[in-house]
Image 1 (tube, rainbow over the protein chains, first blue to last red):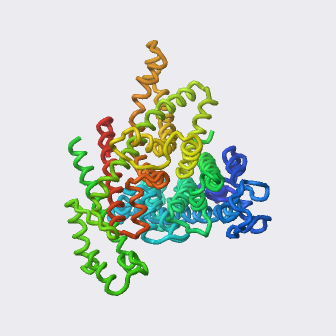
Image 2: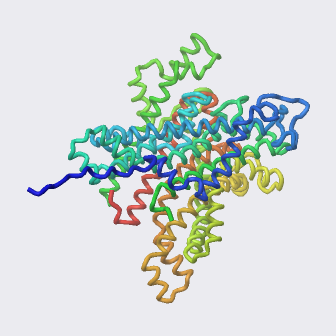
Image 3: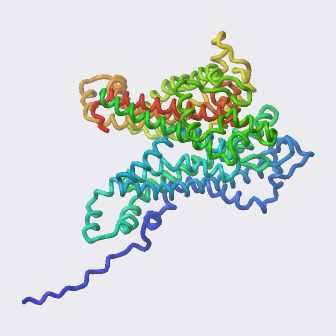
Length: 297
Length: 315
């Protein structure tokens, strides 16, 4: 019998980091023009928000009756309102609320969407039917109206607002995740894993979920931007974060009464919302292009 | 087609039943109960008991649920709890206003977005990237502007500074011009973001079609660019555009709440805000169901139109 030496297979070359983050790192994330544009917009806003407590500006809730309704000046960059509060400082405090809402909603929607969507897509049958029936019912409401309806029941304030917007978003994530799982489930590598007796948990956690992550992350960054806009809209309608606690929406609402005498109260914080939305939009676009080899050119 | 329509219709009925059930039980989840939440600190003891009685909260939950379904089927919407006005009467006045805003927005946005999107696609196709980029970039920024902010900026410029449109005032249907002027700014605000979305979809759809063989064939026949663009390209791109018009209706309904609030227009949206602020849950639950109903029916219609336009569609 011929001597066949079975040399152990060469160890598979593992990339320096696995998964999405590795892909992003290797794709020179920071060199992508859209990502750069996003960072140019978002980083200064984040820095200013983080540094707000130590900046030499009036505190967000502090009133100054000697400086009411003042036009923007070096001392009050965005001017002051009826009670002499500094709009710039209030805006930064509002941005903080916006960011908390944006990231919380994205995280809640992402995690619950992945869990429920994976279960629905992977098991099919009754589980799928039950989850998707509820999803379809939630999708029958326009999302802003669903959020309005939910806060009317849950009350105003930060936590109810986050929960209401998340609940309005989760169905979309479940549907996206389910459709991805459905198309993965019949792929050859899943069959291959089944033939070596991989457990269902192993299949889901090692083969299915990692392959669905990229589109879900892109959806999450879009959801963050939307959540910020919906929170602002709710607060503007007087159903979100309640004054005197500042939020970008309720600062704009406060200024509405004085639109003619002091236009800066309403308009300038709105510009900041727009900038954040544009930044997040470019970020998600950039991430999508980096993670999807088909759109990379 | 009939079979497809019947199947979709049955699905729609199930969704509607689900919506009604969800709204009913969500409102019953309010801590305490709806009556004490409504009354706040104003009522106590006997008066609160009477309010509970009046809202039917004393009955078993199942009876309440079927009572709610029966009333909805009989289009008996009940009365507002705070002001004791029949809700149907309020809706009769508010719904035409909101629907006028929504329809006006759809007409205006389709009229602007299709030529703009087609133009952008044509420019992209011809390699004139800068014009395409300018149009696409502007559309993106407009799309991301919060509508309440756009509304205030336009109000500031066109009503307060230039005085072109009235910022407030009664809506009197006997004076159509007055109504049109009063609703013009809200419609423009909602159209802006709608135009941005639709123009982007039109651009993508037309651009895809422009690369098809039959477009090249049409060109080779010597037809003018305009004819090729509108007769051949746009016609075949109409399907995705029509779908997005239908789907964007939900956002539009949300948007009407905001513009009605800002321009103090007595539509359904303002009714909803008033209902929430006065904790009139009877009114709120009826309105939320109504919005969902409108949205579901529009989606159903969009599905049917899609199927009618493209028989290849299989579901």
